[in-house]
Length: 261
Image 1: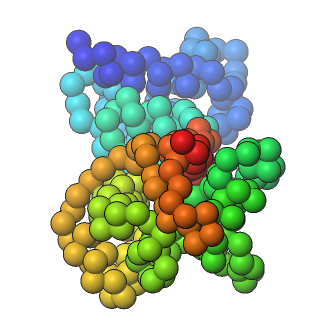
Image 2: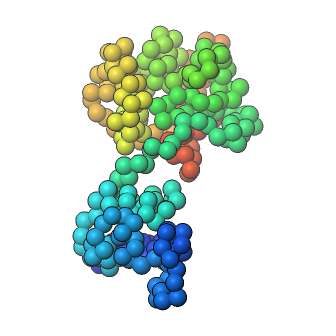
Image 3: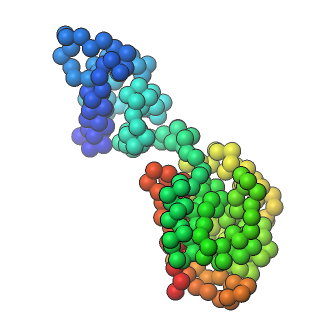
């Protein structure tokens, strides 16, 4: 029997049995033989067939849609982590996976930046640079060392494709910019329909022939570390080793560190 199917069944059973009936609007009663909710009650809350839900808990070979999983997650009052696990075990994409994400860097993470000696910055879902330390401001002169209006953030892709200085600053601009577009496509692959992503792609496709060409190539690369070279206006040619870290609770955020080499 498929391991994931069994795990999905056992997980749903555990989630059903942990809750008290009163918390879900059902009387507890002394005649209950089942701990937590009955299968019929979960099915009622989710608006699905009780027989079909029973088959899920029995790990039968049936296809469970994302819509049904969404209803079950809501009915069982699953946390974000539990919801993610539910969809992973069913091998389905959560339609609400990114609806609650806020593109704001957590204050504890921003505070950590000031204690990092190497250039470091935090990027959001559309690669806005949400926060950075002094070393990063000195490295990205003209981008991070200026005051931005409230509610606006510098954007890495806009800098690379819309700022003429970037072509001199980024060594091997053609190769690096092509790779950035491929990495951005991979990073937002589950969010391509989001208005912010569509707006940014449309804007850059109109303003930059290079971005438009690279985007239409549909290259996909995971954002990786490696050597980065910049031609700084004051410091000259400088080399870094880049490392990108993701937050567990806000996976759309990335902390990028540049270690001098």
